[in-house]
Image (cartoon, rainbow, N blue to C red; front, top):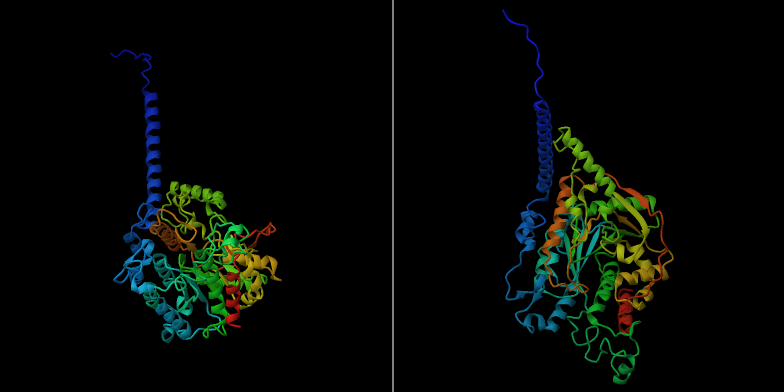
Length: 517
């Protein structure tokens, strides 16, 4: 016979508590693993769009990998009996090489090119239309940058409808071969005839009789050196290497608008680029949208600008809140199991924002959010890259040639700013695209003498930005929206940078204007 069981309280062993604790730990581990997996997934998703040329790989091979093979020919140089200096600048076998020293032969060739006004590939692409876009590239001798500009132009939509004009102030066989190998549009070369190269020992080059830059005016008068009476506003005398750029810019604009047969009846836009620029593939497409918007809503806009400098616009700062919201949405989508990448390219690109050493800090995912253009008074330091205007604007400027040519500043853009402020009835107003389509890839030049002039790093970063923007469908917006600066500060009259006090520079500049009249 079984006795009745009497329940006896067992001692508290903590088993239930341990089971609960274990459950919490397991849950935490699972959540952590899930979070790590999602993070890894997002990073890999970004990396797949960034391509092999990531932030640590700036090799030539990595850059070539991001360029269609058909355009590799523009990035490789032909073998010549000469070497190339840093950043692709041509240097003869010695300083006095026959190929570069024969100034009379170079002058003869320059005169021949300028007189013939040959348009290459016209038989393939047909004559220039009155409303077609003309692209003018100012070229010195940095051939590496020029190669990449040409590659970017080759990939641009509707480039075959344009006329591409290269304006040179240095005659170089390698650069000429490169330009003449272009087969994707009509091409023309013009040569600035008053260069330092062709006038090494006389004005506009450096005459032995010129006053040294830092000599005092009293000493200059005693020495009776050239232009002793006219130092610049800071008491310095001219340096030919700095004056040439302003002369060249003024000459090429006069040449294209008023002196070439092929452009005599042209009424469309002229886009001004430089050898160390790089264009997005939709820059002509965006330019056309901007022109339409300008004609409809902004009659005072007489300049369009396709480039943006960091000091003008920083995507990360401007869109910080929107970027944070996007990241939160992404985590919510991933947490709910939506990892199919259907967000239309709105993935994290924080790594681009963190690259403080690179000047642009462009976030490609923001192209789709801010397809905007802004109207503002033209400012030389902000809106001088990838700028475009037509013959009407140019003729307004040339009426103020004295203001441009006599302003004591060796920069063409500051001189143009002076023209706008002091002479034009309708000051220059610009419509500038907020998402840049023209990038500056030059690390070294007249004003920048860095110890490392390697171009690969910046070129690689630009390629990465545009590749991500392309793959995530951020280019070619269906429309653009116009915004006007809410507070337009009155532009102060600025003191020039000097370097342009020599009366000979004033006269040469003004004579350039009169040549085609």
